[in-house]
Each structure stands twice: as structure tokens, then as C-alpha cells.
Amino acid sequence: MEKIKKLKKFRNIGVILIVIDIIAFAGAVYSMMYISNTSVSVVLFVVSLILWIPGLMLFLPSKSKLRGLCMNCGSSMVGCEYEYDETGRQTDDNGNASVTIVYEAECPNCASVKKFYKKFSLSYGTNTERNVRKYAEKYFGK
Ligand SMILES: [Zn+2]
Image 1 (cartoon, helix red, strand yellow):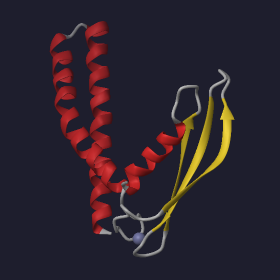
Image 2 (cartoon, rainbow, N blue to C red; image 1 turned 180 degrees about the vertical axis):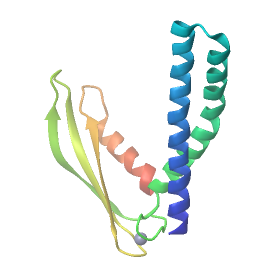
Image 3 (tube, rainbow, N blue to C red; image 1 turned 90 degrees about the vertical axis):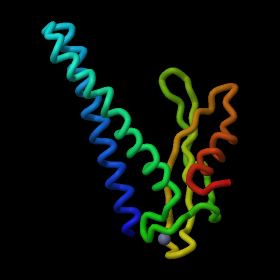
């Protein structure tokens, strides 16, 4: 559980840094266009450049590590048996068809069920079947 808490904390700090980063960048652009205060723009721009790195470094690895863990006990779920099934098909206003897949797996350690949904495109030329499997690999490995 400690592991999960730590990863969630890293991920959340990463998100906060990225949000501050985007605000700083928008502020830099805004002050350049409307206030023409160069020093303010430069400071904000530098802040946004610097924050990207720790933001992404905290966010991306912790997010991908959390995927492979049981949210209940923190055990790894890589390599465990999983099932997936189609839950529905949709077509948007532009005629793009998509399918929603539900994934389910039982934690080998505590038997709690990890369940999540993901929408996939059914557009012509899209290998939906492969994308569905690839997505599961992000959580459970090959
Ligand atoms: Zn578990």
C-alpha cells in the first residue's frame, strides 16, 4: 500500500507541476501579446520550460507503474490472467464508429478485481483487435 500511496503522490505532484507549467506558458504568451512586458514573459517562459521536466518525470513513470499494480494491495498484476469484452458500440455525429471494451482481472494476491473501460475506434483501416490487446499489455504485460 505504501508503494501505491507514493506513486499516487508522485503522479499528483507531476500533474500539479504540468498545470502550473501550462498556466506559466499561457501567461508568457499573454504578457508578450497584450502587456508587452518582456521581462515578465521571459520569466514565465523560463518557468514553463523548467517545470516540464520534473512534471513529466514524476507523472509518466508513476502513471505507467500504477497501471500494473493492484489498487487494493499494491501487488503486481503483470502476467496475471485477464478478460476483456465488448460492452457497446457507438457512432458519433461524424459517422465514426467506436467500441467500448471492459477489461477485468483478479489480483493473484488479494483477489480484488481490477476493472476498467476503454473506447476504441472502429474506423476503416484501424486494427481494433490489435489495439485492444496492446492496451491490455500496458496493464498486464504480454
Ligand atoms: Zn491485490
